Image (cartoon, rainbow, N blue to C red; front, top):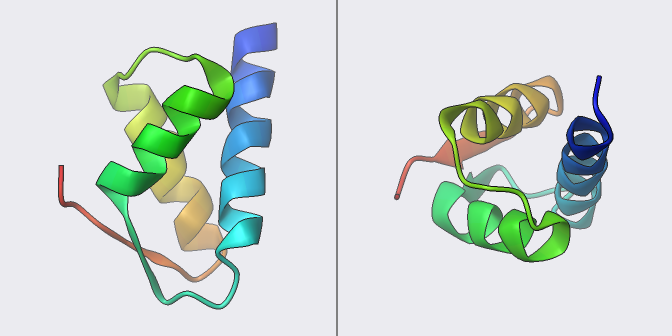
Length: 65
């Protein structure tokens, strides 16, 4: 796993921790926050990882891109 992948996973973890208790989060807002936090490029894998990590925490991601 690259340093960028670690940074993205950490960023997603922090983002989801801040939204603990929320049943639904916005994909658009979450991606915007992640891009700002990590400097990562928007791609399908970033969205997939966000969906996977949110699902594990019992959250639903509104696909409002």
